[in-house]
Length: 214
Image 1 (cartoon, rainbow, N blue to C red):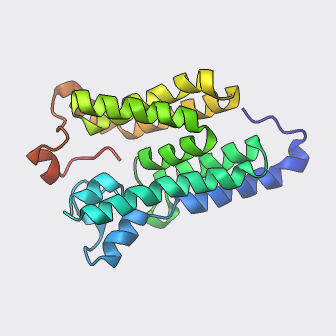
Image 2 (image 1 turned 180 degrees about the horizontal axis):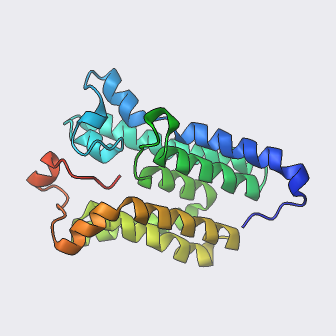
Image 3 (image 1 turned 120 degrees about the vertical axis):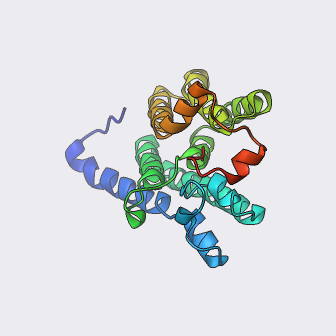
C-alpha cells in the first residue's frame, strides 16, 4: 500500500505521521465533554463506550452532537495535515488517527468503534467516496432502523465506491478501515443475527447498557 522511494529515508517521516495521527485520534472527546458538563465518566454510563451514541444516553443531545462533530473533525484534521506531505503520509496519519480513536493510550486502549472518526477520514481523503458512504448509511438507517447495521453497510460501501472514485491505495486503506469497524461491531453483529439489536428511536435503545454502534 505504501511505496516510498527509500525506507531508510522515509521511515522517520512515516513514523512521525503515524504518531501525530494517533495523538490526534486518541483524544477522547466523549469523555472530556461529559466530564466538563458535570455528567461524570461516560465509561460508567450505558455501554461504557466513549462515542456519541453512548453520550446521547445521558440525555444531553448537545453534548452528543458535539462529540460526534469532534470525532469527525479529528479524523479529517489528521488526514488533511497528512495530505500536505503526500498520499503515503496522508494514509499513515489517517490510520494513526483511526487506531488512536479505537485504542487510546489515555483510556488503557479501550476506545470507541471508530465510525465518526472514519467518516472524517474518508471525507478528507476522498469526499466523493465519503458522500456515497454517508448516503448508504442514511438509506440503511431509514429502511432498517438499526444504527449498527447502517454503520456496517456504510463501511462496506466505502472501499467499493473508492474502486471507481479514488486511488488503489485508498481502496486498500478503506478496506482496512471497513474490516476494523466490522471487528469492533462484533457484539452488534451477534445481536443483529439473533434479532436482539434495538432499533433507532426505540425506548430500549435509549436505556440500553449494551454496546452501541459509534
